[in-house]
Image 1: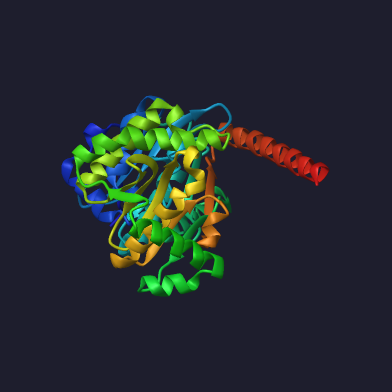
Image 2: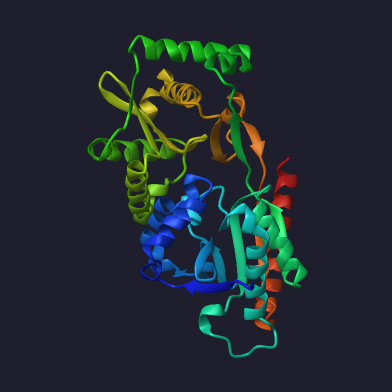
Length: 376
């Protein structure tokens, strides 16, 4: 039976049972409605909601969690909810593995037929110029299946390398993890553990909404201070990001998936780590630190504590997400490749936009390469 696809243009169009189904299909906390719905609530004035709901016999079996951004270069561009400053990783289609192929074939037909080159008068909600999917694991089966289905129907699809994630595959015990570290790494762990054990640094995990209210502003300040000390701007410079993350944190706390750890020295909060976690994995999303306490290395203590907590909770993965910061390799994290997907609509105007966009990207890459050569 051919599947049907409905374009959801507002949150009010999503019934409660579909939100529950959404979370059933999510394979990690970043795909859940607590995260993506919170992002939409904060950024909706900038985008158009464009969730594709896939049904079989009136039963919802999959979602493409997308929104539309109107861009100067690429036109009406479909992207994941959670994109931009939120820098959401491990995004994908929400679909049961047993339905992946039929759903991807249906989505590919929707993309190809709805934007057929010879159709001049399309329902506005079906018109798109480009699809850009960032934050996708290179091994993600639903997205790779969608790419294959689109290519079979003649859509122009480009896959490129994305900024890699890093993750630690954890052993069953803390002692086994310690032996994985280098000699200097084991010394770091011993020093951190000693500071924790003797009370030099006190670690506290947020347990309820009241504590979240108490410590949230300290978390934001420490994150901003860490970024400013590094000479970069912080995410919270954009007020919408602060609203989004606070809403997502509250919802994930209620769902039992938020981990916010605060480190204090002499009663003063000096470092924090915000993570989300499911039964299998701890996802280290954001941290903060008071640069006045750099010599006390509170961030190292928090990292040591949370990795140990992850192992002792029975989880088998500590995900440090995107970014090539050197410290990740020291903690024995391994590179997890990601990809970026770009699809061009077959309509003539979209093809012209795509050619212009690709030309500008090529020039930018040449300039970057040239600068690198001259600077070497």
